[in-house]
Length: 443
Image 1 (cartoon, one colour):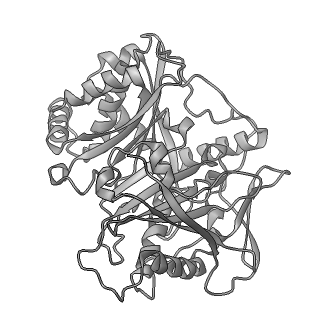
Image 2 (cartoon, rainbow, N blue to C red):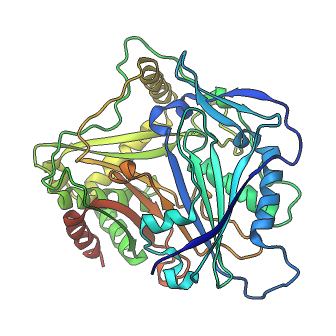
Image 3 (cartoon, rainbow, N blue to C red):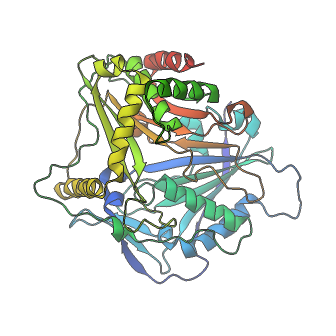
């Protein structure tokens, strides 16, 4: 179905109180060149069950809430720019120039006709998302509300990863909906404190290499990519956990859904891409470091607070090892994230990369990035009068989408999926067929 967007009206929303002009610095993790990308997401809201003619429209509530939010999160109304001297970000905010772009649009269809954006293609999803691009001085966040004939709407957000990680963005969105719902005080007070995650370059350390591989796929390079959102049912996850616990006694530590899903997805992706047996494939997953810092970061810290952990194996090893063996390797790797020494080393690596202005290009056929967005606040609580969103649809930049796999909560519309997960992955078209066969084998 062709979706037509009309009546796009954009205005700059400013803080509801005057913010004095100021310039802020960001952390090493924020300054990582690999974080200078724009992530976008749609929150899908059904129409109200009971229509109140005197109630404010969602865009009116959200626009006023955003203005109040920017009093607390005033850096979001600023402009990000890298200094030429050291390639570090500086954020200019406050004064009369600050603001966030807020677009209101209407469309010619009902949300149900799009299945509430479940398995929507990226080109269609982008219609419901605001424009925001990395540039020589750009604003870190933008919003769009798209209203449907049925009374439902989509709240679209675009945000710079340099400003916040998923946890930070999630809590910003929850704060926005708290204010839109009538709260006068935020549950969580935001803090800046970016100086707490600043490292120092070390001359004798090589720069950080983000997961280059040597494995080669016969399907790559290609321009024929497809993205799928695939459900993994709770029963399948339970069976994976039971099989793993039969091999290893993890009684002293929890066996997580993320760990067993990571192992299974990595094996499935390697098979689907038909990577050469002697090549190296790398699983990269993100791990939060909020409690590694001493004292721990405040819950209100909304900057980047994660590091990438890596497991490298030959393709032959991934094929031959069982799921329990790979889970064990993932668990062992995760332990490094709890080390203050390891964190400082990672910060030093990133500082070296920034200082040397390196652009590392290595083969990515065997690179498998995995991130878990189920419990970072990106999907509730976000009820400000229209109940919780029934779906959350991330839209990843095309180049990043080719290597990243997202573990998400499934749509709230499918009660059979409670306790299950949804995977969003992008693969060459022919490889996707084999990948889906591997996932379906879990049922």
